[in-house]
Image (cartoon, rainbow, N blue to C red):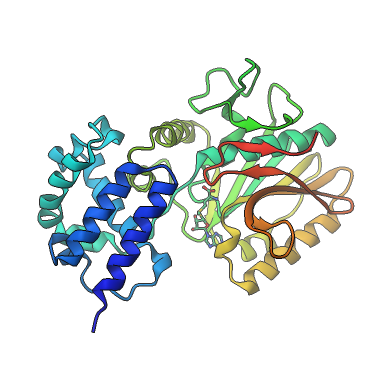
Length: 353
Ligand SMILES: C[S@@+](CC[C@H](N)C(=O)[O-])C[C@H]1O[C@@H](n2cnc3c(N)ncnc32)[C@H](O)[C@@H]1O
């Protein structure tokens, strides 16, 4: 028999995670959803049949992504009045009152939407990327080819065009950028320079989203939690940039994509990735690692290669996982831990003096 109790427990777990990651609005709504599933209400009518979905499929976030899309498209006006992402009050109690009838009215559409895995592209993670590129170019000052695996919509392939504003008034990046990272760094600052020079923007993802289409923009926005206004502001700025600044994100797995990558004379090719390594199976990880070693071995004085990452790692066996920002450069391929970041990139704490 389908285990509704397990579904309730998973939705409550997700509510706790939302609380921990700074979304009290979703915490409250997910707790009410869990109550409603328990009582066999309209939330259960939408989710029925998914009792055995694996935990990591994040069923509750799939559902809330569909709900958020209705809000963003202004198709659920009473609910929109409560969603901060569209200027609503943020009153979670009023949101739940408005959400219940929406679950019934749009049940079929919400059910279909459950097939879409939540997909985000965290612009805040460019705080780690930009600082890493500043460290790299302090030693290897050449035009950069920015190459991202697991790039999602490729928004961070425009990171050189984001602006970093430091607490002391200094800044990196164009003054008119629609993306501003305010006071994003802790610890010893990376070597600052006014601008980074990126001459090519290229990436891959198994499920790339196109940030230049209404559908791509809607999907990306719908999975950002609606009371996280700074994340939404960064996302909207990056979507604006993406309209004007092209980047290529091909539909490919990291292994295949890196196998086909070549270095170019006169530039440093930087392979960058954030919060994607955990999705690779062991065989693809091994392939990606081998490709990175191969590119490193081909690196020369004229065609350089570097590997920059922000991924969950343990510093020593048995230590807790941290989102470490690491940089490998060749010749040698020595790895440096540059710093550590929070889940959405902000702040990034640098550790290299
Ligand atoms: C958590 S998201 C992070 C996206 C982006 N790197 C960021 O930090 O915003 C993980 C991304 O990895 C992609 N992905 C999962 N498996 C992959 C694979 N084998 N090769 C390439 N991309 C993959 C997913 O489609 C998703 O876009």
